[in-house]
Figure: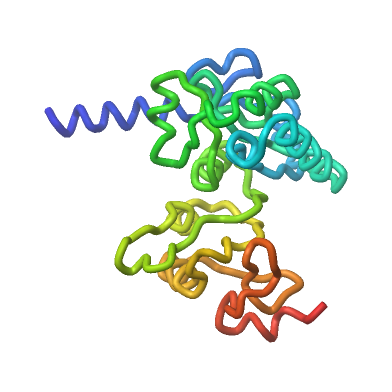
Length: 237
């Protein structure tokens, strides 16, 4: 009986999050809602770049957050790709937000729940509004077939993390979800060497671009190498 109940729950979750069953942009109640622009690009094999939404709700005040979100999407489009900002609105995971949805999220600010992977089920079940972190954005992006995600900084191992076990779920997500994450590294206040050790444990390939060191969010240098042999593979610019 317990086994049957567990299988039933898993089956319901699979149906709930199966992107192939998501219909058009206005009929995705209870499913992942993919914008027409993103859906067309994915269908045609075009480049799509996932973007998180926590920076919009929790990173800066309105209207600067809205201006920044629009600017980032414009940069992605300017490079020939389709931006797919991801968030949860009224309990529906949305991939690719309209201007109206972007403005709504920006206005909500911190009223939108900061949503990591662990929080998705709660936000969806309660029909809430969630701004996705790195881990949640990666998961939802992978579900609809987006393989590239650009963000500012990722979480890491906090200082004294060997005692507190304060380790961002972003690092675990990087090891289990097949999405390439392009970021500015982790914040300098975190323990970067231990973060890299943890990423190695998770089997995550870490590469640096235009620098021989792992970046520290605001700077290209941190004193830590991204991986053992990466130095000779990254020319100095």
